[in-house]
Image 1 (tube, rainbow, N blue to C red):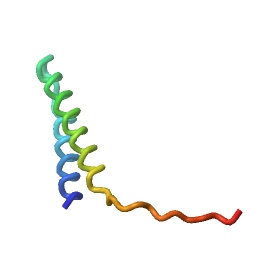
Image 2 (image 1 turned 120 degrees about the horizontal axis):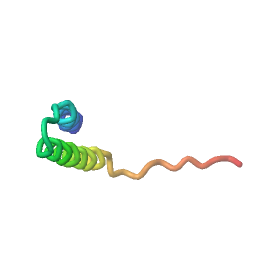
Image 3 (image 1 turned 90 degrees about the horizontal axis):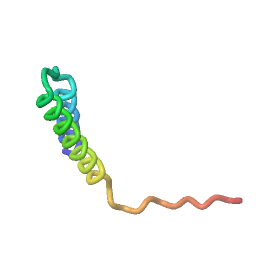
Length: 61
């Protein structure tokens, strides 16, 4: 499920990234949308990790 959400967020970022910039308002909207989607992707990616502790491997040394 999280892979689908993350993939959709990446596609949305790519869509806004490749929009043409015609004026200052469009550039500002594009920058705000890419930043907001990047924050959403970061939160989604960190929330999808398992919350179990990683196994500790003791080294022989």
